[in-house]
Length: 72
Image (cartoon, rainbow, N blue to C red; front, side):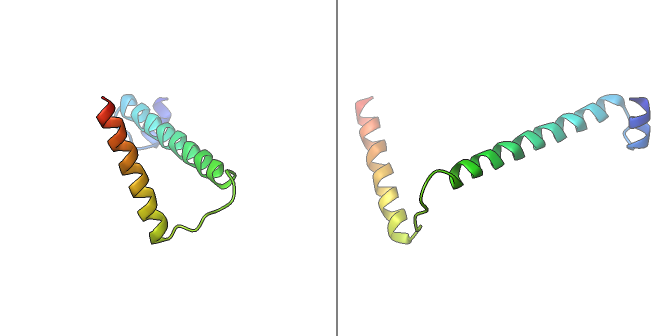
């Protein structure tokens, strides 16, 4: 590991390990995003996202939230 530290320009082994952890977290997040995007693509027929669609979706979510908060 000392070789990677000096070759990579890191001042300490812990700095090198932190960088490896950050890279791993980034890689995992990218894999998760790719998985979610593929899931979305394979989830069925595409729908057109028009302003009318978003208006209806906002209204539905607002109503669902209102019902949920009045039950509590």
